[in-house]
Length: 398
Image 1 (spheres, rainbow, N blue to C red):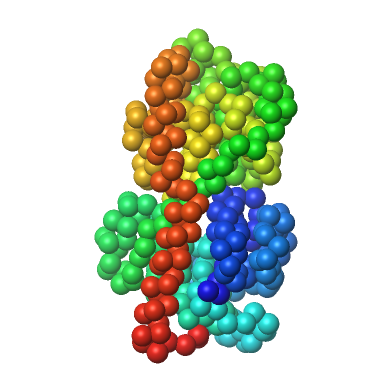
Image 2: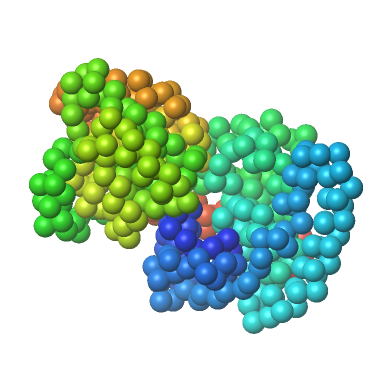
């Protein structure tokens, strides 16, 4: 089968990592995969693509996506008049560029707007890839995207199917039927459960440096809310007398802001921002407990990776975490933005070895449901059914 995965940049983020895992796994199974990067300057993860994956770039400025200007309607009265003009201008610009954007790409059975942003959605919706079927990947929640503006809903109408990551995402979609009528499918992110190849020397170095530390792995941006974790480390020390180093792995637009926030914290000496790591496995292996402090998540890969490494986990009570965890069994949930609650749960896991071990054992069983093989089997089964429907209806690449 011929797949085309379109990304709004291949920078250092969880969405990009998951997409690359899909692409590499598909070529391993003998399928043809082309990756189109619409922001060539953001290519940090491109080197992680398997050699058999065809990698191409197309400059597609985000300003060309007509629906991103839909926000003008909600900003001011004049937006109602400016938006139609912007929409017509952008649509005409994309149409004029379409032959050049399509050129040399070829034809595909399935094309995927994997980032789920205006750019990649518009690129496929406007016919810049000749394909029999179009899939849109929804990494967050339908309501969350709709609240940004209805431009996303308008773009989804041009796709054959919407892929959600959780049961809650599916339920939200059913509630959103007044926006659009579109088939959907739940597919979990693929997780490599093979954690045998660990750099033991690096693990020892980390433990010697930070002890039994608390770990966060995330792109540093507002939705990840690292400030709550920093505050929780302070509460953990002051209220529960538990002093632990906290290592934050990742980079992003809020790196300097987080650095300043950590420096101003009463526990500044316990907070360690180590930047982006291409292989965070030694950090998972060395830590004592993993924390996800996000304000919202579709399906947090880092949570699954920590569980696969046999670590107890604490997460904010966001939809993606609820899909993974049974609170108090294979992990622990706390309130969103609740540093006090997070510190309490950390104190329990760090202070009760039996409780932590029970969570780890249950977590190792749960994470098997998210194996790479199951995810790829699900995508291929889904894609095959779509192609059969297309052939039955006499469908041709469009």
